[in-house]
Length: 86
Image 1 (cartoon, one colour):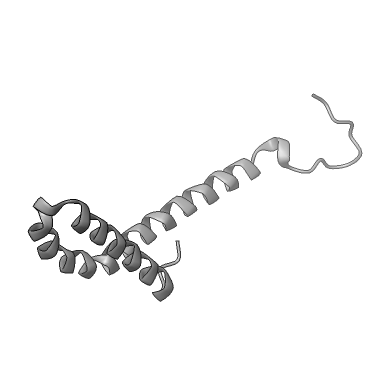
Image 2: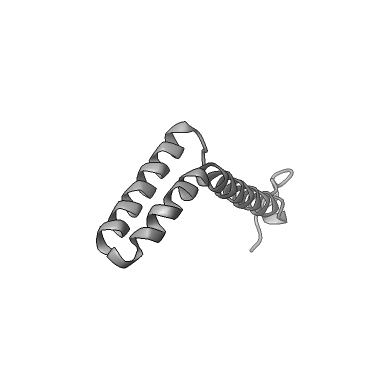
């Protein structure tokens, strides 16, 4: 996941839509939504960083699995002109 300004703006817009929909559909919680919305927008950057770091860890795990599969004996090239055995 790439955490740049464009991604953060998309996330902020998505959060704004969620807050607006919640505000419109939950009249009993409007006070809580109004009070918590600024904190949610303030937390966009740290949350995006958290998810970006999680995404990077999963990417490294996939590369390790691919490297381990590439090191198996069946994938090593055969020397000489020996026939393949099953």
